[in-house]
Image (cartoon, rainbow, N blue to C red; front, side, top):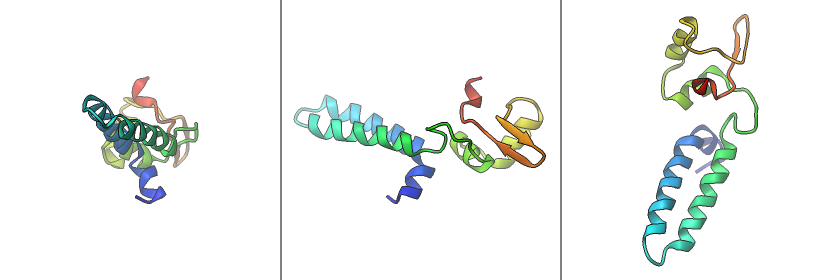
Length: 100
């Protein structure tokens, strides 16, 4: 996996790795592998866009939510989501808008 694909798939991959880590812990003799997988999942979360406070583009935010950019902008126009920054055509997202 390249660093670029890890960044674009960071949350999904990290979630999958975290689940696999818990599964491995339940099996005998695989505790060492489980801790490695868990550590890798934590690193991938830090590689994901927005993990360190930087703002996300509309495409990155849509990818994180598993929807298209058009759907994200439609939700924004219906006031279902509010971006962190909107200046004309420039729109940036914090990444935690769904939680708000």
